[in-house]
Length: 464
Ligand SMILES: [Zn+2]
Image (cartoon, rainbow, N blue to C red; front, side, top):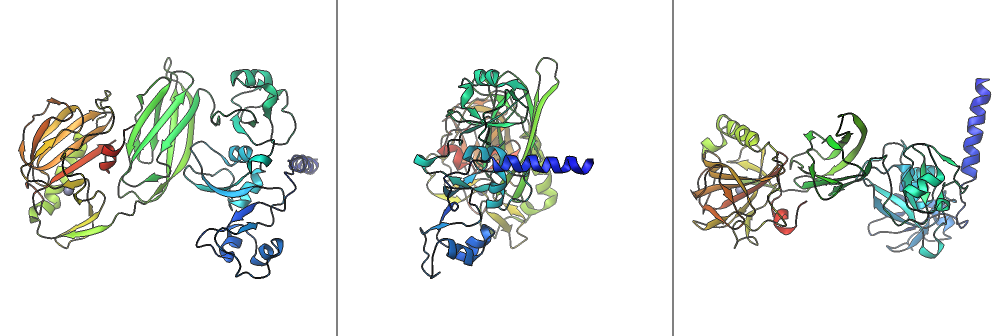
């Protein structure tokens, strides 16, 4: 009895697969040879052999393959289109992506040599068959996750679309009832894909993949007001109201963070009763930034004594941990040294050894030229620290709100005091050579969510 049920299930599965659109009955998708590719590497990537590729493409001489050569890939006869690389965004699954390109999820998995179908991570590079415009499969479209059991008409009305444009990948018209978790394809919509259940509408994470030392921006849109909580790797993320229906969080990625996968978890709570409404979790790829390394000799020995440096680190980390709810800045930050942006002495992120010691430090900011030249506040905020420190010398830190702070180290003069509110462009001190230095300069830091990040980005673009 059990056995016959099992067989029935398999048969049902086969029926669904056989009902998949056959596409334009192509021999397979087309891969365009990239610089640096070899036939052997291409064969390995798609789980086939050099001989099979040569045969299906009727190529006699394997030396006649160059970057730009179009190769049909054998073993995927149900798939057509040109294979392109595409980054997985947060919330996407193999199934939603397969729906978007009208391919069988199993084929998409095989194309990418994905073994476990439920483990795509955000930031992953995926090969997808991009249909040529005139021959786009009729069933390709925008994936829509069905949030709960509902009628076809109801769902179409809610998504402001034609009920008959919602199709299942199988090519059958969608049944009258849609089942929660089912992925439909909206063939007419240009809207972004609906990947989540209500009230979660979208989650946008930039950059994707995450990069060591960079500021990550997370935007969450919901269809109704909710309270958000969650974490990105080791960091608890705090969200603040952006524009309508949007919550925004800024979080720094540590410059020394181990490249690999980070779990991102988002929890939505009912603002009335505090109950958990919906939670979503997915791994995100973190990539190395390729920072270099350097040895600095001649720094004062007491400034590299852990008995001195560690309490100072702890003091600053504690000072810069709170995330005040008011965002004081608007648009890009101004240049705090004003004249020296193009001539940095030292970049952010470089691994450092002091006096030929271990390469255990890294540069937590950027260094500008200057000597007794003015330092300007790059954006408005409250002064949370102003005074002498052993490593940092005469130091000032400004709280700009939302967990964003800026720091000014090694000053000869400090012109502000704790509790002062400064405007962008206000002179707050002078460049000097106090603390752990080998000469006069302004060391400028930006901290986001308790982590020092690459600061020049904050001058070049507007956050969030
Ligand atoms: Zn520095």
